[in-house]
Length: 187
Image 1 (cartoon, one colour):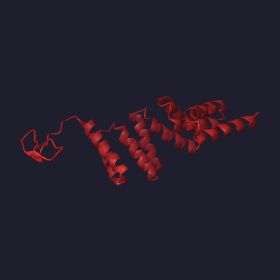
Image 2 (tube, helix red, strand yellow):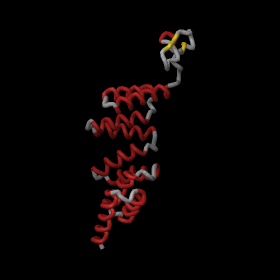
Image 3 (spheres, helix red, strand yellow):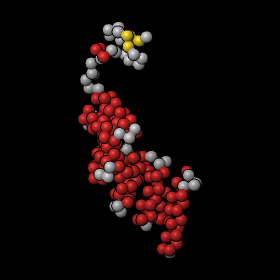
Image 4 (cartoon, one colour):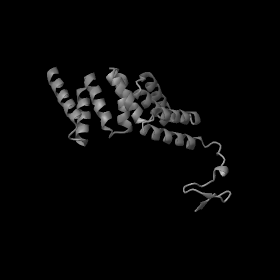
């Protein structure tokens, strides 16, 4: 049997304080509270409750406006709901708070790649490569950007890197074949 560490009343398993003796909130401990909201949001999102997840992510931002993870997650959620402008705004806000968020760079780079803004795509995807060199999806997209820019050797290197790590990667195989085909046609 467990007992409250303040009043000595018997408690259910896992409880440390009885409901009447809850500890006073510690002032200035916003990161911990924001992290709790973030975990609750992730749990809600994983259990198909996107509206509840959004409420928890917004609560995390209210408590800690510098919470880049909540910004990133709200961007992903906006993207899934089809609100592209809001998603881009949240991902950019996430990058302002944490410039080393490789997933936000990847998402922005992929968006720009598919919308043919190749200079912005190149910027974000090279940042992904610098931050997390082994992230193969980022390397594939960067190789595609290089191919579209006509940088065949750089594209070939990126595809080859992916194939070294994953010899059965179909996208890298197709991309490398396309690079070779285009390079031969240009000669």
